[in-house]
Amino acid sequence: MTEQGTHTKRQRTCISCGVTTDKATLMRIVRTPKGTPEFDAGGRAAGRGAYVCSSECFAAAMKKKKLDRALKTTLDSDDYERIAACVASYEREVRE
Ligand SMILES: [Zn+2]
Picture 1 (cartoon, rainbow, N blue to C red):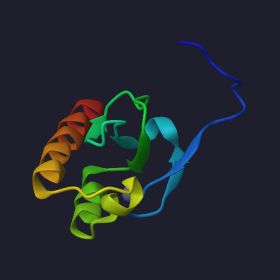
Picture 2 (cartoon, protein in one colour):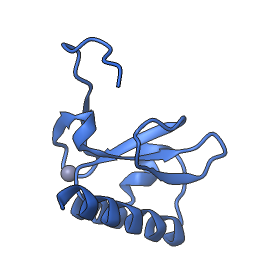
Picture 3 (tube, protein in one colour):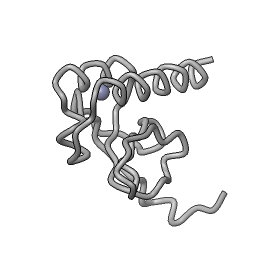
């Protein structure tokens, strides 16, 4: 792991509850250059990203279609369900 300046912690905001915290503690959803929305477990995929702090916040963002706005694309319910499953399993891993 390379550190690019330990003093510049990358802060990001949860699109659902608005909490601002370190990038590493949030989960990233990315719109890939192909235009496909995907869960980005590593947080480094190319494309426009949006962050949520928990699966609860993802569910809330899903209800309010906040992800559509954040990623400037239209997600259908299949996209939301696919990403929700990834968010949930990632969260389980992290909490164990
Ligand atoms: Zn949140």
